[in-house]
Image (cartoon, rainbow, N blue to C red; front, side, top):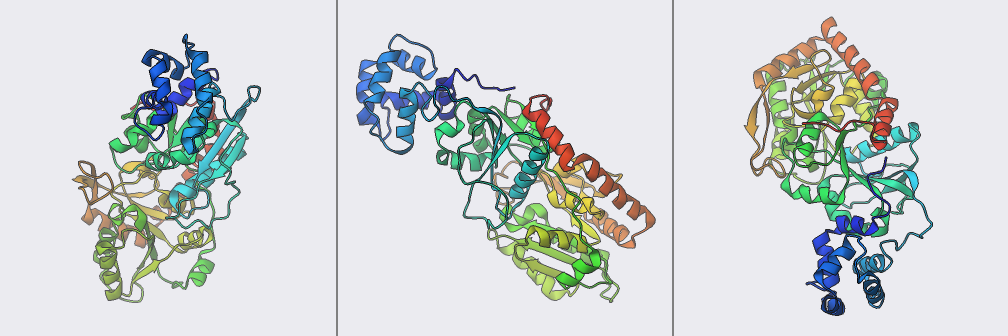
Length: 469
């Protein structure tokens, strides 16, 4: 099952840090340890250093180990590297200590964001699948982290596999926070999500520190697999059938009981242009120009501290001018979000790109009709037989459209088709109800905790075939 040879600790350390960088570190090439380690580079050949880093038994290996022990008065990460090298790569792990089969799962488990929600649900699914698991929370100050979830802030796991469930850029930023002994001798997996067709080049160095990557959809799998030869396996997020009585949900949220309610949701931290709130508002206003009491309403739920600029300003202007547009701009708890989704009749997602589309899947699980752009990650579950899908043309993202968007393309949903889909949804015919019923059944079958737990277990055991682009 394991992709790491437990006897190749130094080779594994070289992979984590980069063989050239590690050899340079030992040789005293420029770093804060240069003066301290210069005697090593004077007394050992480059070949001997590289053999040592690669874990091979060169003629000077014992001598190098002895020299390294003399220089262990360093600090921080450099001290840890020296200790690992001097101990033959086993510092922090007793020679007779064996790593246990299982997964050390690292993620933003307390954060009120989609990637935190995905981590919590995947951890629950893996526990249900009886995968031995330790759960480790990583705190990032830019996100509200108030979700109650059983996770430790201790970073060391006893298991032989570790799963980092945050994107490659975050992993690279956090890398120095993880003790090397936490990562060494383990099969290292990243669980990434990405919203555009091409993986950012800045993410590519993360592959060097991992053995494989898991992703939630075929769309993300294609972007990741095209950038690496390492295994890429599709392990989606579970989507529970949590629901709340619509009457009670509307009462608690102070929403009208007799109106047909459309809902759109977006996170400002993830660039509002990707979620396309202005396109949604324009389609809604054209679909329902009548301001009468029986006209549908559109609830616009957003949150986030970043990107609170012109697009949000335009959204607020539309809402001020039209009493059928209700803006809710604050972080919701998971319970409040379940109520919000339960209160609506239809979710609108005229997105330009989705890595997964968690809100789409969650509303489908509640038996809501969904109007969604027929593009990117949501296509794995939002299909013609269970949703109203909006056609699109490809459009250039541009430098300001999305992070790493220069030279990339995404969907521009067809406005006229979207208007027609909204009218069909509001008509709430028996055909529309059949779509919604099918949506709930499809999500219950394909995205339950039990189903995703089985998929994760197969991926852990390397029985799940890697994605082939």
